[in-house]
Length: 126
Image (cartoon, rainbow, N blue to C red; front, side, top):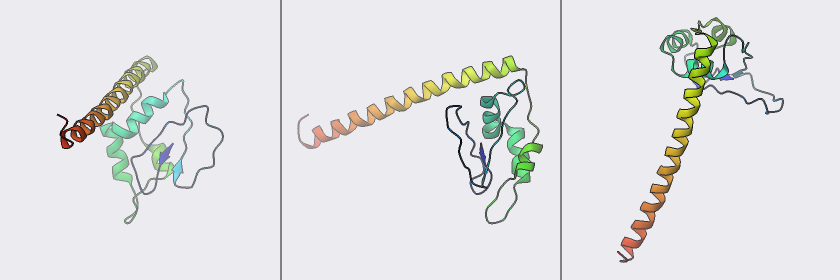
């Protein structure tokens, strides 16, 4: 799923367990042939692949609210490596996402500990 008006550059993979949804005209919903392209790979292409981003950036339309339409998105040339490489890429992305979540949890704990330290310091308990 890709937002095509207003905030270009947002894309998401909708999990299979999400029930049928009604979307607005400002979203493009893509269904993939997963024997050719994995959702995780396409998602990464829309968010980070330089040639894909360049193609989309050149084709954005609208002065006030730049946007894309389904035709532009479908015409975007996506480099497709073999599925085994896409799977390896998706596995690495999943590992990185887990590490990022762990990192965010550690940062939250550090913020909590720092707030506790400040509280104790200002009460003269150190």
